Image (cartoon, rainbow, N blue to C red; front, side, top):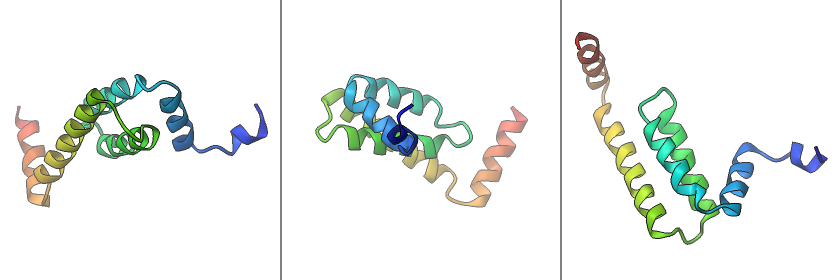
Length: 97
């Protein structure tokens, strides 16, 4: 592995991959959306949005739609757990099901 590759961050590597294959962005966002409810999912979805935005200075229509859907998912998750009471109520409800 060349020395410069060892100094490249994960974010830089992902952005480079997305620049090399713009069609990958839609699949990347779809997977991030599917995993948004998993632990760490919202942060991963936010990172995916940043990566795609950086890689595609002018995203295509499909990517723009996926980005908007991702933002909606993040906003609903933030709203759903806006307070500790809401979080505990959701956890209780899930345990009862």
